[in-house]
Length: 278
Image 1 (tube, one colour):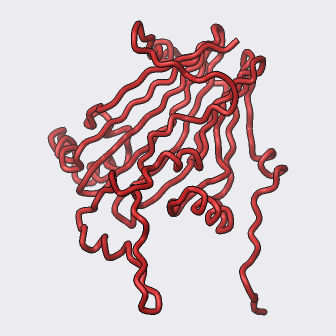
Image 2: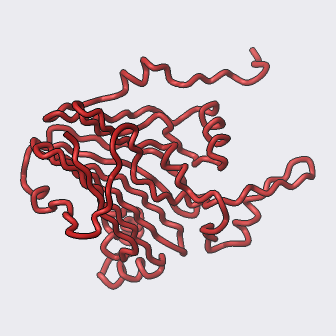
Image 3: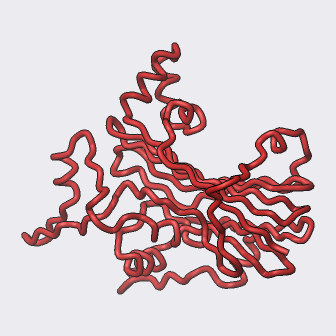
C-alpha cells in the first residue's frame, strides 16, 4: 500500500499534554513539569516558520517547567520556543567551526542546479533565555544590596519532595559538538531551586555555559533569579583538564559534561534580580 501525499501529523491533544504534566503543590506554590517526545514534522515546520530560523534536530516543543503562585496568579515558565526565540537571528554572533571551509559548504543546499544559501543565524543555538513570565509582575534588578541565592541553605540535607529534569532542545551542531538547553528542579519543604542551563561545546573552538537559577522561598514569597554566562576557548578548557592529570578517556568524557568543566570556564556576565509574591 502506497501513501499519496504527506501524513497529517497532529499536535498533542490538550488531554495528552495534561496527562503528561506532573505537578507538586508546596505552601501556596504549584511547580509543574511536562515531558513529551520529540516534536513531529508539522509542529517543527510551523515553529521554524514563526521563529525565522531552522530549529535544532531534537526539539521538544511541548516540554516545559513552570512555577506558579496560586494566590496571586504569578507564573514563570521555561519552554523551547521562547528559548529559541532568544537565539540571534543574524550573522553577528555566528561561529565558525574548526573546518570552516567544509562547514560553509555543508550549509549550502543544491537542488536541480540551483544553490540556496541558508539564512545566517547563530547556528550554535546560544540563548540568553531566563524564562517567560506568563502572568504577574516582572523581576527587578538588584544593583545595590543584592541578596544572592542562599547556597548554604541549599546544602542542608532537607528532604527532596519533588524533582524533575526536562530537555527543551538539543543539537549536535552538524557533528561539531553539542548545544543543549535543559531544566532541572528540586523542591524542599521551605524552598526550591530551578536551574535552566545552556551547554554549548563547539569542538576545537569554544565552550559556553549559561545558567539561570530560580530560587523560591516559600515562607516569605521571595523569588530570586540569578543569571550567569561563562565562556572559554576549547583548547584552554582541554589544557586545564590535562594539567589536572586527567587521562585521555577521562578528558573526552569531561568535555561532554558541564559539571566537570564549569570551574575551568570563567564568568563573563552575572545579573541578580528578585521579586516578592503575596
